[in-house]
Image 1 (cartoon, one colour):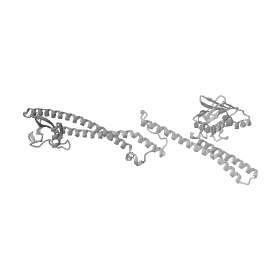
Image 2 (image 1 turned 60 degrees about the vertical axis):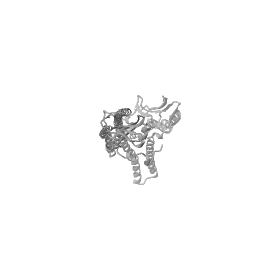
Image 3 (image 1 turned 90 degrees about the vertical axis):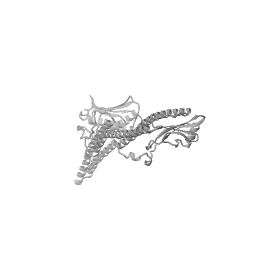
Image 4 (image 1 turned 90 degrees about the horizontal axis):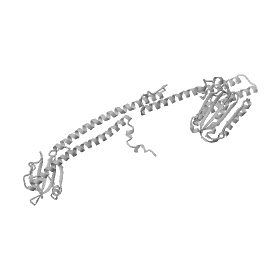
Length: 460
């Protein structure tokens, strides 16, 4: 689903504000809506109660006036400040309270409606702004001596309006103070919640500035979202530090490995150029240089293969016959074993496995090459499928790996001290480990009673 253009997104200015400000604004707006709703409910309930009482008083007064008009007696006094007025059907004032004189309380339209039997009730004056002589009046038609009369009863709303205005002032004050307190608490809470994030950001900035052995200070007695973020960042920092250490070690080892053949090439060329040489001597020098160049090419290719295997996207699994794959990988080494007068046995079950033969074949070849180069006696290669997993095992009858070398046997350029002067770059087992990891499997080496054993386990 396509995202909306920036100009159509709601409130783009809001997204540019700091997180703390956005949180405080969100709390303030939410609290404003809640307080407005609560204040409205309280005001409506109080207003309804006051209006009910005022209407009850007005209705009671209206009834007493109606009875007095029908009986032709004297109009009774009403509540304090109340007014009364009796009109005929034409609107002439027949009886009126003091102060009203001949001024009718009803406009012509309401007078006509009341004369035709409708009940009329309305307010005179407003709550805000404050006005004097606010009234609530009620008019009804009454028949007295066969004549139509319109009886008007009115009570003053002063106490009711004053109570509502006081209520409004108190609600506004309470809501304002509550909003300020909620905003302050929201601000302090947001700052406190984001303080670890800012601390983590400062730590990450220190890492980008080249700080070493950086660890974020994460409380051990908490388990919330921010703390889990801190643990995740620490784990990431550990991985970055380990990666940087591997990179430094790799650069150092690669420099050492490349320096040796380059130095030999330079020495051979210096000797050849030092004085005139015969054709045979020059040929021998070129063969020596070719050997070292080939070593450099193999080293470069091995490094490129390791980098390509660094991501699982370069592994393409396909159904493969296990026996054919193992046989093809072992075939070139059978001749090597025969030349050295040693035995190489292959035991592979007939099964279809889901692997990338392009990478697994040279990995098996590296294991056999290591066993033939550094081991003695018979070399055995077994391949079996058990519980959905492929297990490849290469053993020899030599003295095995030095115990101190086993933990780093699969590191790049790692070689036992006894083999440092021999052939090899120390990338064979590292390549095997990379192939295993790319397939989601493992590789490990161990010493047995009869010699060395290297196991490659892959899910298939």
